[in-house]
Image (cartoon, rainbow, N blue to C red; front, top):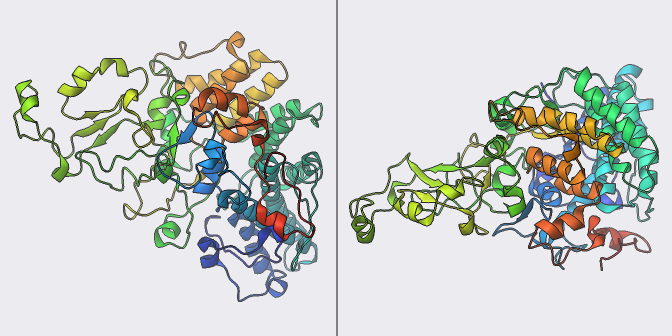
Length: 561
């Protein structure tokens, strides 16, 4: 039994922010024949109400909305050929208050908050559960409420703050300073969660004490960069990450690539993950799942000798790595590029295998009209950074299979991130994947502690943490060569290291906005985004439907019409 088995209950009240949407996932699972006033006061109803708070992670983490908001328009990823949300990368007029991603993120975060408020408000009067049981469940939903408010202030800045359940239609809203949202909601919620959550849960996927410590550490680290920081934010963050690293038995996997082995999801490095069930996603009961396997893929399926299949994925070509990303790793000493990107595609379509032309036969490459390779042989090879010098055009021409080097990269052909591939889907068109969405892992905790130490001027300590990560990442026998010294460590280096370790994992926009480097690094490394990005783009626009539905309107963030 795990928290994967979510029961999506009728949300007790609907904020103006959270009017019902056409999100088919929630509609399919919605139980609208029960009343919250009669069902929630029962022990079973209360438990389901708690589970429903978890459900609001699903429309963001692991689907296009979340990846678009966190990966796109950064220094690491620019746009591929397809997709409807390119404005979020281009920072042009398409990035506006009516954008579906902008509106949907706001709406569902507030729906989750209101569901959490319902649980917190109704818990004291509940009969049939002990005070200890009620406190433990309230701690879970306060952890989730803190996560939802943290996402809101990171995306939108000053936002509406309420810690009480809204029932019925609400047409007024406040705009509370982000500093107060931290002070009144995020930090106290997480402190309560830390004090009342267990170290482990029998239901895998429920919030735990180390997850709450990890999140509070990230909250305090984020606040430490602001003009409303408290003096001990960085030092408290360091201690919280130390607790996660030392107190609970988490450990780095020996092999970085093993993190992405789909049969190894519940590994010792995972601090907290959002659960997906193979049964539910395969049967369509979960209309979200983890869809990362769709977005980072090149268009391999119309290349010679290839057709779309389950193992290689359904290539939606949303996100393409920038040249900056592809030069990050020294592959002679670091395994993480090869552990993150796909290099070889094997022929699976006999009908489109190319044959040698007369000119190629005359050049001695093979017999005219003979197939260049057979099913199961290499059809495409992308050598990637540092290996391209071995593949001049002359060698490529003489090679049986297609070799794609960086001078041939396009919005359709580019290195494919392999972290999210899901070869277990029931058919090649299936969009929902079963992978859990890992929101917190030990490797990230080390790098966040390094950042907290750097914030305090402790470059030695920061280098020590980075070297733990680089030791794990090292090519066998090259551990020493992959180490760094304290004088090499500054914020730019740390951001590069976070990209090496966490590429494509949904942290990058938060990393750059937290450290106040988004505009600078996008201008430097993302050619498509550079001409348009401005200082105000560190926040997303307030959704237009929020403005329209609020009595007297709702203030828009600076810079947006």
